[in-house]
Image (cartoon, rainbow, N blue to C red; front, side, top):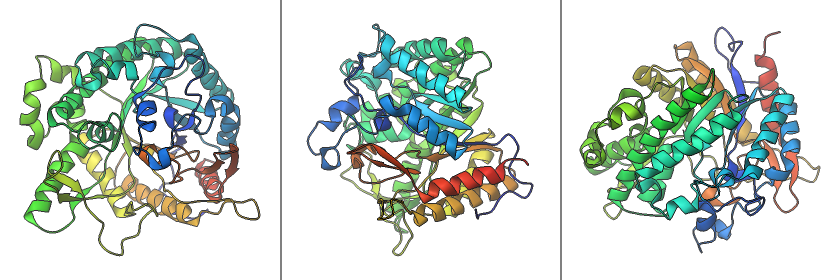
Length: 446
């Protein structure tokens, strides 16, 4: 195992883990009473997903979770971050409780604990029940209360065993791509709807924190934000304006109100019509850690045909990337950790970091993925630099354990440490699996 480490070594209580999400791996989309999510509907909408693929079967984790837990145990991880599927637990989003759905997560949680792996449960990873979307979804203020009811059910059911909780995954991604840019479910492009969704999701987060504090003894609670540096594609006034506004929507619209108690300046006035008395206090609830998902920087450009006047630009020519166009910029990861420490003064858990590829099983039955190993070496080294500079990083989770359904990209990009043949569901650990296993072993105290 190669790569840098903090000057004083990895902390003894540092958490090493892997992450997944329900819709991306579970499958069993129509089994045991599960209801439809907005992603089930988007996936059957022509040309919204690569090759019109879906998460209907995905990695069949619903049936194969014991095999996947065995892979985690072999890897040596301390923790597994997964999401609970709202439509599996409440098929229409509210009222009717699906006991078979609740039972599945009981089995998963108990099996993780038996394997010595700590469950980290995320309440929402983009799979809003279609029944709630039909009632207005996140554009409807009542959706925050529906989320709180769902959170209460989960906290009461699993809080005796699950102590690490995440309210939402990547607020900015599912709101911006779902309500302003047609890149994700539900595929709406409207400024006012987007703004309402931002505020109502923030309200839901705050209400969810309160629910978890009330019902889970010794709960450790955070939220997961996808943060990347946003830089102008070209050094022009128009692109600099675009980058500044995208930065607020992408990086600040959720953590600022949740942690600092206010919306950032460029969008604060836009948010005013949707804020009612007491809202900001309800949103700004104490949390225990900042969950960071990070891959690489974003380059922004002016796009006057878009909802907000900004668009995604291109990386500088010759920049290294994942192989799917995402830039690889390790220094930006270190700098993001330093900025989080300065701005929010919270412990940080890196809840996603990883690299895509087009990995395939070779003639020897192995999957060699040296690009991913190099990426993980570079990024964990920069995390170590940030820790040496004073950032309180408590854990690191690789995205992802398995090659999963990657939303609009379908099964094209493979992020897993474990290769999945989606026609046979055969799992094959990649060379990066062995690399990460060695890193974890080397980090443990003798």
